[in-house]
Amino acid sequence: MFASTLVPAMEKCMIDVGVESLARLPEEMSVLEGERFSFQVAYRGVGEDAWLVAKDRWRIIGSIKVEGIPEENYTLRRVRHVPSLMPSYRKPRVDVDYISTVPGFFPDLLDTPREIERVSFVYEQTNAYWIEIEGLKPGNYECTVTLTLLDEVHAHTLKLRVLDAKLPEQEMILTQWFHTDCLSSYYDCEVFSERYWKITENFARVAVRNGINMLLTPIFTPPLDTAIGGERPTVQLVDVSLDNGKYSFGFDNLDRWIDMCDRCGVKYLEISHLFTQWGAGHAPKVMAKVNGEEKKIFGWETDASEGEYPEFLSEFLPAFLDHMKARGDDKRCYFHISDEPNMNHIEQYMKSKRVVEKYLKGYPIMDALSNYEFFEQGLLDMPIPASNHIKPFIDNKVENLWTYYCCGQNVNVSNRFFAMTGARTRAICAAFYKYDIVGFLQWGFNFYYDQGSHEICNPYLDTTGDYFVMSGDTFSVYPSPDGKALESIRISCFYDALQDVRAMKLLESLTDKETVMQILESVLGKISFDISNYPVSKMLEMRKAINDKISELI
Image (cartoon, rainbow, N blue to C red; front, side, top):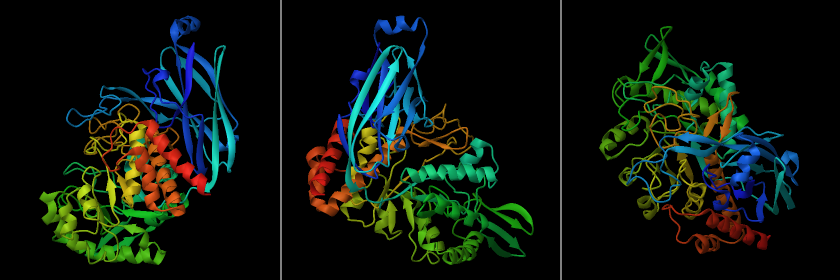
């Protein structure tokens, strides 16, 4: 009546794909102590008998049970299918390694964890449950997942060994841009209200749980993805007053933000961009009390490098840094000039940077850009090239190298789109390790607006930002009704990539980098950021080889 099997977390169980076509989870697996391990049980009604037994009902309720793992060490979640009206762009902005380029439903949302779960069984549809195991002590375990649908019972057992070797702490810096104005709009709560702060902290905790250790900190409303001449809701953390031509600053909301970051485990503060996106030509929106009246004093109409805004920054930046030094937090700060400038903007970028560089001397300044000329001309020490434009930076041995991806990285590279396999999302781990990547940036942790930030979108219905980008680019978590963030398969697969790097680092500490690279290349072949067809089996084999070598040496 139904078919079922255990499958890796990287597998995406499409509704119309038979269980027999899915990658199988090995019967025996190993993880490191402190590692989070996820897998799925997939199931599907098969054969004419399934329809007859259902007696013309579409839905049958069954049960699922997990045994062999202490209750406090596992969670059970249902994998929900979510609509995508644009899973890919048209050729040539697509390659052969997409699950589907046809609009439809894709498995992505990991529902709320539940202690007792009822299984909904639908004829000739493949669905899955997500089992996550964490916090086990070293030793051997047998995890049995039992599905019961009507009178049919399927029990699947995984032998899991937790090695007596701890997964090292994450070294890589990871930021996914954190958009609190989207939270305010989606939940219809006033910025800086108590409800706003509670929801923001809920989302920050989920971010940190998934390896995000740097949080975009909106000292002013970030000038990102904003239509020219438009503006996003004000989330400015710094209070600005202008009385009789003299500026003063208040930092109460900023202090509350940093205290929240400390509670959640955020290590680094990514200070929002000091100039507008795509050119650095204008000021971000800055609100102030001018002689007691709240008003906008800077924005799209403000020249970036001449006049009042540079004068404002000459007072603000020293005051900001003095405050951060007094807190002992200034060395946690990373700064931005402008997002994604290109060669047409290089002269303006240079002018805008000159406005602030004397105040930010000794602090890291980084920006997402892909033209090597910016680095070559000394415009910034910490470029963040896109993963499909990183080769010149690697070839020229740029130190402390970061990388990023967004909607433009869609052919022959890793990304987290709905229509890409989980293995392709995870496969970036090998390039991270090989090239000693220091940090990674992705712009959409929770961007729920459309292009230009005109209107809020319902991420459960519109996963493209109203045809802004392919599904999977604008957000990695879903906003639950109770103000919490629900994870996606995509963010979990990327977190597994981070765990893979940490395991590689552990093996390197026991051997050397050459040994680790030999193991990686023996399984994966030549390693670079050019990634397309990395099957699930290869990623499982790669990680097994790493763990087996660690087990041999401890």
